[in-house]
Image 1: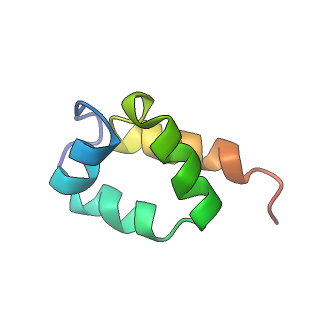
Image 2: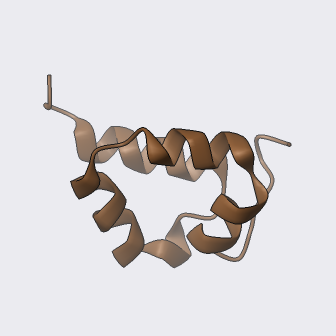
Length: 60
């Protein structure tokens, strides 16, 4: 797996990249739902992590 590998969208990313899938599965439900709504923009492990951090900012 390459960190900068890009896929067509979230669905392909999660089916092809086990690290991305494990990270996604560890996220709160509301973050996963937001990502599903914006699935075309989440197409790499890097974009997945960046978007999750943006959505969870202030959750602590």
